[in-house]
Length: 72
Image (cartoon, rainbow, N blue to C red; front, side, top):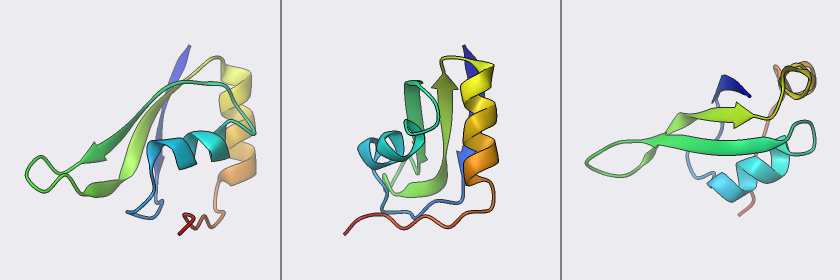
């Protein structure tokens, strides 16, 4: 299992949307979107646990620098 930081996504993104995006490249074990403790608003980054390093490498190769827009 490998842990990575995943950031820069829209603040209205949900865990399900991010897992759907990421699972195209890597198997996600867990995801934790970081939220403000008081407002519960997303801070635009998350921590992921992925099944293996190969998937993490694939994810970073494919999504690094790309633009993602959450579904409305």
